[in-house]
Image 1: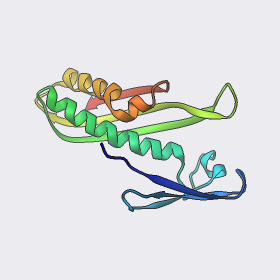
Image 2: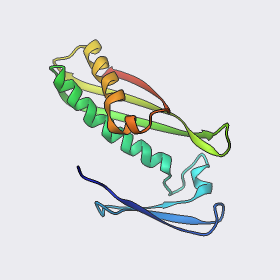
Image 3: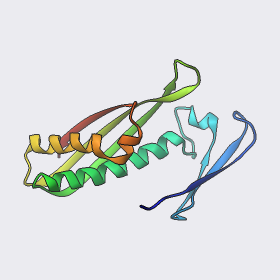
Length: 145
């Protein structure tokens, strides 16, 4: 199976330092990261591990749901998936991913609302990123558009 690589180069301390995340496998992009921006309400031009996890989860979930719809006898026309990853305090100290909320709206032929929601629930537990995040509360809001 394929592997993918990303690299972060960090300079300085936690509060005054910053880094650059590079998508090594694809070579498509580099992103600035900083701890103060990570914990602020506004990202101000920097990404965070949580945003990168949200991107990975929404992409993975979209693929899993597309497969699930087809397995249930439907044909996906379009899926819009949003994943919101929330950083929160860890009772043991430091921070943790508090929860992830997935919202999906789909245009699908051949499935009714119940069939779509069933496929969406299956994708929530079946996508590899969801599996990697076992132990994190993942909620789902799924509906046909």
